[in-house]
Every structure is written in structure tokens, then in C-alpha cells.
Image (cartoon, one colour):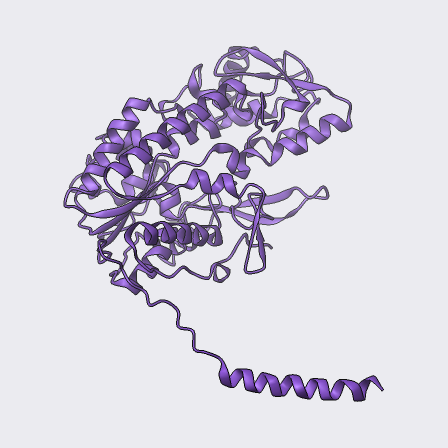
Length: 475
């Protein structure tokens, strides 16, 4: 009976559909246009690892091809933009610096990664990469800080910059490198590393035997002066452009993934907290389990702690043995052992005591951002972002407020039926290093930049379909 009742309805629906199809108005998408003021004919990108396309703890060809500048440049070509040249690795050396790949999950669900070590571009002594000598428009250099842009010795400190530095000008500063490049439009997302390198090292390098200038927070006056110098260079001939602000560290999974797991383990075993080294010296502090990832008076545990969190309460010196191999001037076993003994003496470590639960074998400072360090990071991020916004507004530039964007998406969002969040791996936004985006994450960033450019310059640059870009690759 129902069958007969449905038939007329189906026919009526089909008939109505035919009528509606015949009457559908033609809705034209807005025609792409460059607007009235910006000239996109020659675009260059200035920045750090985020600009270079770094992901999965390495720079390799797939990441370069899916960098946000490459995606942005493709869309700019729809409104008069020209070719965009990146310093791409060759197919034979497509794995570049090497990177991490996901190989599976442990029984507890912990991701297991392995380094990719074949088809590298590390072909010269001291870890130098194969030189790229052609002209380039993506000037992204992993690890570079605003503090470094006027250094005449920077090419000797950073193999990524050395790779693109002309042999005829080995002491060329990054500022000079940018000044030598013709352009009509630019993006500049620079300044993250002026605070991020301090944060990812757990703030432990702000003093003590492992001190490093590259892992300290840049003084505000240096940031202000150098940032102005770069923007003056980029706008010297009246060029337009877009700048990006610095996201807060609590916005990325590198600092938010391990803490909840560690807290769960402490709670499950009735352990109220742990003892940790703080800063770069021998000082110890007590950390309550409730402080982990807490919004007030909280601490953060970086992703680098994932290998050591399961060792809590065990008599172990694994962290210090690993550190000795990392910082020792030689791979000779005796030399490494000497380095280990020096570290244990310097920090007064007794590895026969319970790791993290005794003052003699505390949780390492490099595996913790304590309250004082988080306060330093927040103050610097706020100061740097104020400088970026003020200098951009003074020059009439577009602003991609990355800090506001990554803060706003902490609870996750959905686009075209796909869920996104800052969650490690499952959130689709961040690669395996927990700091740099996946290709899809870079596509989302490119779209946010396009929206800011369109708004500032009254342009109509189309955004991209982010589902055409991949998230984390599963084995």
C-alpha cells in the first residue's frame, strides 16, 4: 500500500525537480580581482620555518610544495600574480634535512615515529645542505629570529640560510638578502623564534652550563629595531604586503599533549606531584599534579618529554645519558661518559633515586615550562605582537593575526564537514613535531591570509579548498 502512495509523491518530486532545475538562476561567483592598490605581480615571502614549509621536524620537498607562500602565490596568480620560485629540493634529495614519519601506535595509543634518513640533501660536512644558487622568492629560513637578520656570521650558524646564501657573498645578512630581491608584494611572518626557541627548550637555556644565545628571548628593543628595519626594506618603494603575529605557545600541541597524560598517570597512582629542576641551574621546585596545563599558575610539559614521562618514579638516568650524547663534542664513548659525569655533577643528579619523585633525581628543566618561564613567554609574545601590529598599521599593511586565530580555534572548528582542532595528530592541523602545520594546516593559514589581504586591499582573491591538501600521513 505504501508503495502505491509513495509513487505519486516521487513522481511529483521528480517533476518539481525538473521544473526547479529549469528555473535555477545562474549565480556567478565574484570574479577574482586584485583590488585598487596592491600589485601582486612579483610576490616574495619572508619568514622562518613556517614560511619555508617545514613540517614533521624537517624541511623536505613535500612540505616545500605545500608551504603557505606557495599556496598563496597560486591564488595570487588569479589576480595578476607572476611565477613564484622556491628553493626546492630535487627529487633525488626530496627528503631534505630528514623528518619524522608515523609508523604506528603503542598499545596505550602513543604515536610511534621514526626518522626518515634516505634521499637527504645533507651532502656536505658539518650537516650542510646541498646549495641552492638560483633566484628565489620564498626566503623562509628555519630557526631564524628577528634578532638574527643583521648578523654577518649567520650563514655559519644556520645551514638552512647557508644553503641559499650566494657563494659570492657568504657574509650577507638576511636583511641584505631580502633587500637584494625585487618585489611588488610581500608576506612577512617573522618573530616566532624570538620566543619559541626559548619555549621549546623548556626555558632551560636562559642560564647555566647549557646556555645558548639562540635559545634566549630576544630583547624587546632589538626586536623593535630589527623588525622596523625589515619592514622599511620591504616597503622602500611603496610596496604593499601582509605581516603575521606570533601565536601563544599554549596554542600548539607541542606544549599541550604530554601534560594531560602525565597528570592522568599521577592521579591514577595517587601521586600528588613531582619535583623538577627550574631555569638553567640547580634549583628545584615542587609541582602539583593540578598545575599541569592549568590556566592559572600552571606548568606545561613539552612534547620532547614523551619518551621520559613513562619513566617517572623509576631509578633512571636515561635523560642525562641522552643529553650527554647530544651535547658531547665527540662520539667517543669515553668522552661521552665524561660529559655525562660533568652534567650529573653540575646539576647534582643521583640516578639511583626515583626519577621525578626525589630531589636527587628531579624532572629535568628542559622538559618543563614552569610558572616563571611561562610568564616570560607571555610577556614577550604580547610585547612582540604589539610591535608587529603597530608597525604594520603605521605602514598601512594587512595583518594576519595568527595569535588571535590560533587562540580562537582552541575548542576546534568544522569546515566542509571536516573537524579541526589543535589536538596532536587527530586535529588535522599540526604535523608530527607538534609546532608546524600539516599541508592542510598551511592551506588554512593561506586562506586566512587571503581573507586579510582581501579585506585590506579590497581584492577578491579566491580561497582554496583545503580538503585538497593532506593532514598527517598514517602508516
